[in-house]
Length: 481
Image (spheres, one colour):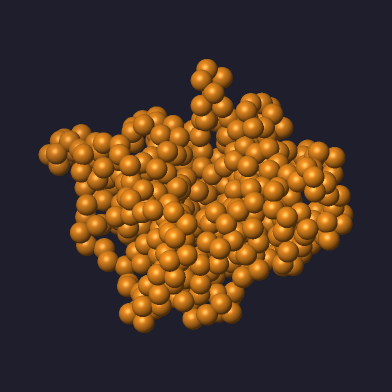
């Protein structure tokens, strides 16, 4: 099979990063203010200093956690046709997430996002064929902070049949999110069988796990909800400036998280995640469209293949402030390098501009097309007699035309990529069609989707149950204000 792929590191180099990560955990250790997490580590056999909220984790605990961790994870959806399995055989795509800004649907101006923006955004995601799951891509700034995560989750679930990936800032919020998802699938036991949500949990680099976040992750793990350990070190600031040193920090944080969750709930579904990148030498700003980011994530992809762990790595982002040529270049570069790696299960980042601080609807549509084109290039072809096409070459002969041949008709759809919004016409035809640049075509596509696409609604009975859950949460959370 002529399926293009690349190997970035030799086996001994992968093992060097692995061993360096184990040394960090064993000698430097991790820090968390969560007594629950520290207690789990102590009971497992880690060396704990309660006064410093620190623990060093012996190699054997990491090895045991790796043995316990599932090698495949099924991510289910409200609509079962969107279920898929993370088994290192094919990549899936999701948006970037939790951005405070959006480019306005009409004017294109950057502004604070709202819950209505999130609802619209999720409807577009539901329509696009290369988006397999969704984050809470934009923040519902119009909702009181204590209720924001729950409202965002419900908004997403109402507007897509696809898998949804929220986050929770403490154990109580996680419990409510679990309750909401369970209401949709028919109970907590059913949620373990059909996890329609997975949860983002981000360590704070370097080597620190916030109390609320790690305790939320423990709740999700115990409920059988997959947890994405999304580490985000910044080379030169929160990790060493060398790309290899940043890979070590990223890997150590993932392994530390894995130990906590596997000893909290053996066999818990955990997804290795990373959104690592580099800081600008000029300004110190985070650069998510940098080639070095691709290099870090290519190394991490090799590590997840070595561990046989499902993974989600960032790509398809841009530092550009508009969906322009810079955005296209940076997104295509970071997507291509990841998709060519072995075993990348999920690539996140579609729809993001402005270093992931802003979500752009037309960029999301363009990114869906970039992902489609890159996937076609990376699918390759099978070397066999039918594809070598000797019979039809002989039949047509020198100077002939292949267009009318049965062989051509048979293979056209599978061989030739047909884009949805890219222009492949002559210049004259393009002019007759209005001389539209790609971002304008994408903006029109967004309007068309919002006008015509309606995801299947949640049943009335389940909506009532969700409303009751939200009312209880509101009474509990807002009384603290």
